[in-house]
Image (cartoon, rainbow, N blue to C red; front, side, top):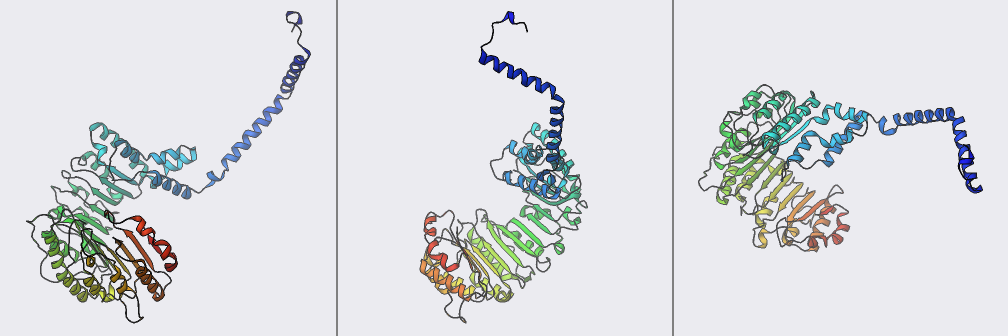
Length: 498
């Protein structure tokens, strides 16, 4: 560059300019070498990336990671409030799609693994209007396509005012041969479920919590692998028969007292060792009992009887009275009785004692759970006196109970259950003691009870769980927490104060 056009640079600046030009010249001279080095670095980077530990995980482990990620960040299903965008994300498997965007390999694994698309949970808000229904149909078709031929876990939850559209049902029914579990807690009144008959070769568990239906409900008779069946009481008039002999579990929800006799008869055909669950909904004065009077033997191993709804206490007591008087349960290992807190239901003690003696509970019964059922201390001790094989005792105070005889455990109860002599004590095999309570006992009696059980226990573990009675204003968490330091040294870490 001619120097005459510009003034001369100061010596300090000129040295910097010369150094810059020298570096530029060196870069030009050695450009091929720099290019070869850059290419080598790129190849090394790609090699390290391809062989990165995260990319060398087996597909099976990567699939489990994806499944755990989706479960951890997915919102609980079936709990209000119901939001369309949330349910649409659930159907689209958004959590899985998020991790699939990390790299091509993850995307291929996420989109090409059918088991990651096998759970379908549909809420009624997905078809609350025509626009939402169209989006739902597109995503549902895509999810079924990704699921290919794997077993499907299907759940539909909704309100009666938003019944399942025929288009949704027909699309799902096309894959009914893949259903492993199907849970319907929704309105399907106008749908003819008979189209599923003979098309459920893989179905193992079915729940039909439907308010009602206009058609016969008999499609599950052609399901050879069906093991667990739960049916709403409103459907009993539409059910002709039930394949009881192939079931390991049978349940009826919200059964009115006039239908109790029929469901008990259906349960009598269950095979030995099956589970039977009955939920009784008795709230109308006009309801009448139809339990029956003829004796009936059930070979079940687990029986759960719950009372639901706004109950009529007199009708419920009569129902339990007649049911206990009629049944014989020679193989029963677990018995659970529950009642809502606002219904002062009294335990039919004489009938329970007769049932216990007739069924041989002293040889078979391992678990007894009585929740929110009024029972006096004397009746409880009399019931426990014959249960020599009982290992798990679970109870909860009735929130409406008045008087210490109905609030347990109290000091007298704990003293009675405390082992004072090796050959004289109630329920000698007790291993688990669970109470939701109003805390009407003293620390010393509880400590003595736990200590005596630990000393007499053949195994080193005796578990105690004491938790406050939910919804009862008189129970404070602090009252339970103050017992922790006094009790931990006794139970050696096996005490739980919730």
